[in-house]
Image (cartoon, rainbow, N blue to C red):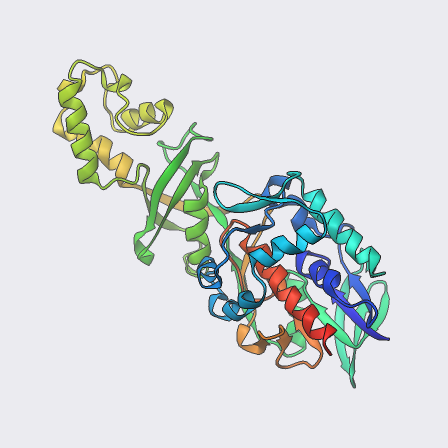
Length: 400
């Protein structure tokens, strides 16, 4: 019986093992940590954001800053609808939330982990944890996998290690070109009076732009203890991952907290002023922001919150609107977004055959997951790439 060694016990590795024909192969998963499926466990705050309700491959690829062209053919064969069906067949109920993210009904990532553990157990897949791969050698028609727990011979290798520098070095030594990995999905570190003591304040729809890179994104925004986060920031961090690394994470960002052009905001302000001249500016709910944030805007704009709105000068109004609609911040670094660390970079996509995720350089060698130079914005898309790639590998091997 031919031996398949899966290196990496994460999403791609387990999904592949779960779909392989165990009557055809002896399957072993090697995982360097003491626990498997660690990213699945922490995803979505421990609820596991399995995938995203986007069922048109052409729309789906728009969420991938790197790998979008290559993934089109992959998603044409296995997309989020297929992922939902796969779990449904295994009695796992999934639900689509308002923002189209998909979670297990149980709201627990353990449901997803248990499903994979059951599948591989049924198939008698051997799972070896604390098994660190040190080197892979090509030997005639096979591969010798050297680990801290002894050597393994493989007829086929599925390389789904994630993007650790060590795992990228191993595959580089086999001849693959590596695009230097840089962090994707991260939050921005900003020290600014407007954000001080505002952690936890959120905005339903904000606009962010980095003038130097001529790039902009919109979406929900969150003030954190160290700066700014939320989809509006995470999206821009993913799309501009490589450029921001080159800037060493020091750059200017402009934020429009209320997603209104400054002229439109001025009209709303003037209209409110005419209708409520006697109200104090501090008590005026002119824009859709929290009261705490409004008081902070007035403080930063140097406007007395007890002043009647009729007495607000044109200069004071401009100052308020500038801080709301065109506030510039200096970013001085980044922070990892939760534990869901994602990287841009990895194995060069030109060296992969996307019909079956096989290496164009190494025979009987397949590559999937984050070790590839593919990454997505937050929302279940990174997992979907893993499921789809792993499914293609399993189909290819089952049909040999």
